[in-house]
Image (cartoon, rainbow, N blue to C red; front, side, top):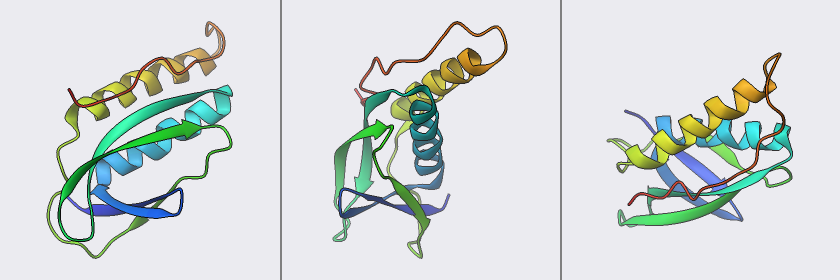
Length: 112
């Protein structure tokens, strides 16, 4: 699995490509819904330490994912990714014809 950089609030973090791509997709869906949420991801800092970062994502909150030359897998973010995918599916279902309204961020997406 590739590692990507997340640029957020003037800082750069490294995380697995799948987690970063899902974070971007979920943030975009929240922005379309006019909502926000807090999500925690494990990332790698420049000295290789794994740390847990809390992101507030959604409308008006800039977030950038970019490729990295880092090698190896990113830190494990299974629970956060499951949470974001579930919420993304819910938001997308609400956008579909016959959906039930606008979405709201309701959870922390934390690894627990």
